[in-house]
Image 1 (cartoon, rainbow, N blue to C red):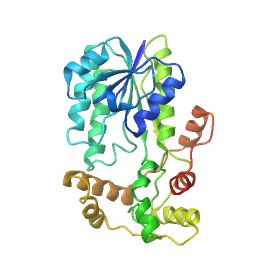
Image 2: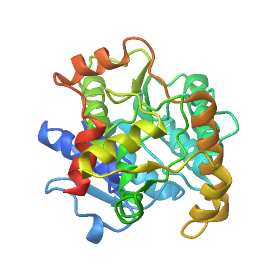
Image 3: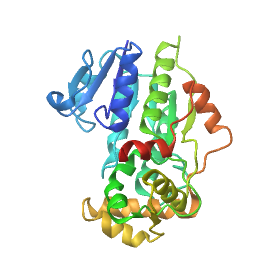
Length: 287
């Protein structure tokens, strides 16, 4: 049978596709423009998006397993609910959903609250699923690289609680493992939740120290000013999204993104190797 991947051309989704292809899975991807998707040979592509019901129905025809990833957009919740309804209509009973860690804690952060709503919808609909809950992606650090290297300041207001940032490649691999586990099972498996974290829990000062070590010069932590963070983000993203990110940063500072006991061990066993470290990622993007 076929595994359908949504969000297949993004950072996480592309890793999922690559991992599935490497494991010999039959993969279909829902993409906006197949000509620009750049996916591996053999991946079946259906043109459309998560608000295109006809495209969703076409993409889900003959599909047994769904990877549901939808990005941080204003109508994210609507996209997810439409997709789940069409999946149930198509008889799909094997789902891996990309949520976010502490979705039930960051209740005032729009995209966290939306993902928690989707989790509740999956439960209420009785669809067996793996709920993946990643921490903050260390891949987002590419957006601050030039600021750090040019001005000697690490600008993300992470606070002093700590974030267990995770590499998107680890997220993609765990997702692929879970998709294939569900795909190959004799019947629908019980719902499970997996926190996706990195091996280190880093404060803002810790992150600045890593950059200092990698670059061989002093990098200062820019502090906890979430209002200034929002204003900076508004230069290159919509105001609603910048505000969403400000609320998230506030919860970084009040709650952190702390793994639960056993999370790192569980992921290490699942992957059969150590988790990718933040320092290695910083070294990679500054090489």
